Amino acid sequence: MSATPGRRNVDHLIVGAGFAGLAAAIKLDEAGERDFVVIEKDSDVGGTWHINTYPGAECDVPSQLYSYSFALNPAWSKVYSPQQEIWEYTRRVAEESGTLDRFVFDTAVLDARWDDDLQRWVVRTEGPAGVQEYAARTVVAGAGGLSEPRLPEIEGIDGFQGEIFHSARWNHDVDLAGKRIAVIGTGASAVQLVPELQQVAGHVDVYQRTPNWIIPRNEREFSSIEKAVFAKVPGAQRALRSFVYATLEARVPAFARFPVLMKAVEAQGRKNIAKGISDPALRAKVTPDYRAGCKRILISNKWYPALDADNVDLVTDPIAAVTADAIVTADGVERPIDVLVVATGFYVTEPPIARHITGRDGRTLADLWDESGMAAYKGTTFHGFPNLFQIVGPNTALGHSSMIFIIESQVRYVVEAAKAMRREGLAAVEPTQAAQDAWTAEIRRKMRPTVWQTGGCASWYLDKFGNNTTLWPGQTFTFRQHLSTFDLDRYDVEVSHEREAVNA
Image (cartoon, one colour):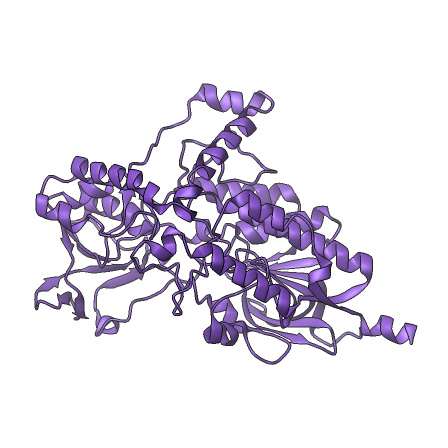
């Protein structure tokens, strides 16, 4: 292929340097696929664990499982790791992998379009050096579903004169001591940050639309003896990791096939409420009226005591408007504030990166998904988008276990695809429409009896069509089995134009 001035040719372009992008880089490198570049819009590796620095940020998956299987960490401080510790882990793994020389930071992907003549993706990026163009055989999208904050559409919010920021873009320069703070949202981030704000603020108003089921957080620190055993006794940490994995997998039937089993979780949640809140009226406000698991189950020992504190009010009336210095609810009450914290989640079913990827027929992924909802073959590849692989794609997220397991499964599939393409001399692979449609139909069939479809709630798992295009409806090991080999017979393939000319 002839070079174009100013355009860099690479075999693989990886978007995102979080857990997904980093794993892809490491495993492609190990497989001998070393001609790649990783584009990251932020200043370092780590993804969500680099940018989410709000007070109290921690993982809600046990540390032993929230790490790469090929890079165990014997030094985790406690059962559930804090944000800084997870970010330091990803940074250390990146440094030790020898791949950081191919990472480009502070650089955003402007657009990626498939070029049939080149049989490559033409990708434009913008960073400190200006606009750069790449021609890549494959694009591995690892941007993640929790990467782009979703801001609420509230009348007057743009005119607020105080400090305002999203939980995922925390402003550490703002002094919160003694301030009147409003927090919009009661999801996973809010549950962690509100107890921290309650300790320093003059007053906190928490605006709740729908309560979550929140169970106790069985937290403890690892002792020095445990850490020594993990570090020096062969197989000890891996055995604990396997035990944690099996424990979490045992929860799948309650999510996927027998939602009535979630009554046990609801009992834990009610006990947690009774322990943390003394006021019967407040207890009623925070008790969900839907089946546990329908929305994400949260874990916290601090949330309910924080809501019960004298300097915190839980507001359940809808927000009507934001003024220059207050929030007004539908009942006409105006509550003055100094700081507004938005904890309203992310664009999970409408990932922004989809707007920047244009396939074979000139349509973007976003265009396609707007018509019929997110769908992908094995959550990873797309008909009409040759050589595009998405890590943590449609129906790959989890409500019960570690996403690292899913990420490693998909990365192995990508590596096997790269090997197959090189072995067979292929320039392009894309799943057949029939294969993708059959996969999607089976996912939706399996989703029907799950708690996510029958639990009686509205959640960010569901798209505008009412389909759960976010979660995997089964055991994680079955997902891994599906992606254990690259099934070339389910793909339309193309040899390179140069090879066709030679064989003509």
